Amino acid sequence: MRAARMALLTGGTAAVRVERIAADLGVTKGSFYWHFADRAELLEALLREWEAERSIALQQLPALRGPAAMRELMAFLAPRVAASERGEVPSDAAVFAWASADAAVARRVERAEAERIALLQELAGDPELGEFLYLAYLGFVMRRRRVPRAAAFFPVLARLTERIVAREASELTGSRPAPTAPPAAMRRPPSPRRRT
Image (cartoon, rainbow, N blue to C red; front, side, top):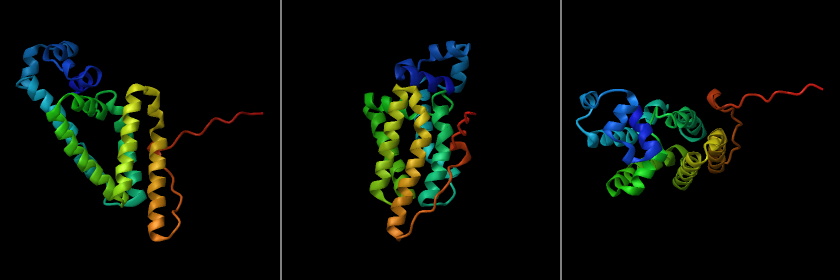
């Protein structure tokens, strides 16, 4: 699956070929067919794995809402963002590119996106804010794919997401949001101080 994810990410569905994947792994085509009946089954497995990402996130998240939920969601996503570029987990960018070239895949991606947006809307407590946050994430995903150094911006996206949700929550309740520290996985290392 990791080899197939990398093929999809780097070359699209045209690169997800039994011969190529078997050669990359240094195995025979016969050993590939031990795991998958054919290429179509492998492509289906890739798409189903991506569709299941929302369920995986829900299993990892405690029953929280508002800024705390967003902080936990971003902490969950942070390592997966990097892992997707190594083929360790499904890549949103790869699946979106696939959907842009295949109408059947596009319909499935749209259904999965509706579920993801609904989750963000529920966590944020605001339908418009949930949609906006999803669009911000999409922008990050697409830019990171084209400009790898943009991956370093994810902690900023996470902090801003939490801040926006906290601000919206405080406006609804009329209270000021409490400052929060980012999860350990999202903190920047301290800058080295220069001695004078």
